[in-house]
Each structure stands twice: as C-alpha cells, then as structure tokens.
Length: 311
Image (cartoon, rainbow, N blue to C red; front, side, top):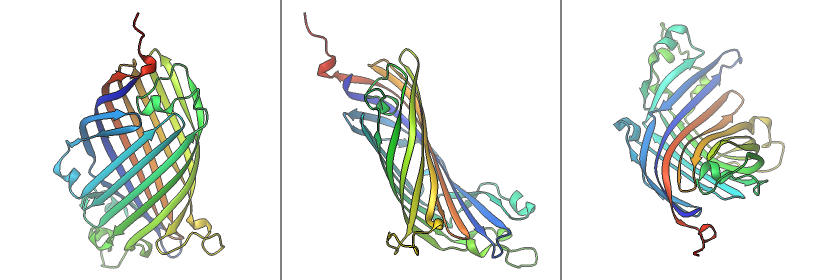
C-alpha cells in the first residue's frame, strides 16, 4: 500500500430537528420539523498515515453557508477509530412540517424560512474494533487498506456530545400559534427558550465487510447506543434525583460504504446517519444527521513492505 493518498472529495449534509411537546393532559402532541439548507462541498484532500487533511468549496446556494459551519474529522486505524463532528447553525433553517395541528395549518407549511432557531452540536465518538486482524474498518472508510475476504467484527465505543438549541416560538407563523378567534393553540411545552446539555453514551454494534468481487467491498455498520443527558448546571451523580428514566435515551449510528480499490487507484461512496435525542416529561428533541461522501483518488509513495526488491 501507499504512505500518501490524494483524492477529490465531495460531501453533502442533511439535518432534521424535530421538536415535540405535549399538552397538560398528555392527550395531544404537537411536533415541529426544521431542516437547514443542505450543503454540497467539493475539494482536494490528501492523507498520510492517520492524518487526513484538505479543503472543500461550497457549491450550493448562498443560503447554504449563511450562518452555518460544519467540521467532520475521522481517524481510522486497524484497532481504534475516532469521529469528531462540529455543527453550528444560525438563521439557516426552514420549517418543513408540523403535526398535531389542524389540517389547514399543516397544509400551509412548505419549507418556510425560519429565523427563530439556532443550534450547536459538538460530538466525539471513540471505538474499538475487536477482530481487527481479520476485519479492516479502514478499508471501508479511509482507503488505507484492502479487505481480501469477507469478514465482520463487533465494535465497542464511547460517545460524548454537547448540544445547544435556542428556539423563539414567536417567530412561528400565526396559524400555528392562534386559532381563528385569536386563542393560543401552541402547546406550552413547545414554548421553550433554550436547551443546553451534555450527552454521554456507550454503544455496541457490528460491522461487516462483504467482498463481492475483485477489488470491490460493501460495508454496513450498525451501532445502537444507550446514553444519559445532563443539563447545564447539573452534575453527573449516581443518585435517585438525577439518575432518572427521562434522562436516559437510545440512539443510533449507521454507516454503509461501497469501495473500489486496486491498491493504487480507488473510488467510493459512503453514508453515515447519527441520531441524537433529548427528552423530558412533556418535551423532546430529535436531531437526525445524514452525511453522504463520494471520492476518487490515487496512492503515492509505496510503503517499504510493499516495494519490490530489485533483482
């Protein structure tokens, strides 16, 4: 294999925030769905060993970059992997759907620009690959290795996330706040101003590389997780007051990839889906992140172990 890989890399991000609130009787749940303008980036990247660096250009509309920033870093070795994700969105969201309201109000919603929500997410995930001698995670996601035969492995990981959300319900359209007589219809639980919490979780899943043809690989990875939310100002302590079921959440990370790699030339497409959830007795937030990457590249500077000896 090679010490250096150069490639042209592109990625697109999709994001959905779902805010839900119950009324006082728990009989009606209203949900609001928000999504930022999607972003398409293309640019050159180069990798050396575990270091992966480059720059991408935004090819989307002006709205896609207005008040929005993202960073996604990955390190894949045969034994361990680390994912770091940073996202900040200000004045970049659209109201795409609503449920729990009357049908006329729901019909009026069609990707309405919404300036009343700001978001912040920082996530760090580290994991261990058990059968790293037979299974290559890097072959599927970092082009630094090849998988010759189909194999799979369990993966154990730890995840830390910090999420903030500011929401101004008064920016919603009037038909989601008041009925025809001017009486309020929005559930009080949705009239939150801000959320700021830390999220700790443990995930255990399975990853499988299917070598279905020469130099061709398909990977699928599923890692469910169980985690605990701690609001800003709270301390993570093992007592009955704080360690309660409403703070416990179940989330999921799913990946898949298809890769063509001859050792010198390579190309592929991979996707990753993350979910982050937060809930209290009458209010919940679900953040679903979807990322798709496509790339094509070539290897340089063969490693010493792979060089042919001169006759």
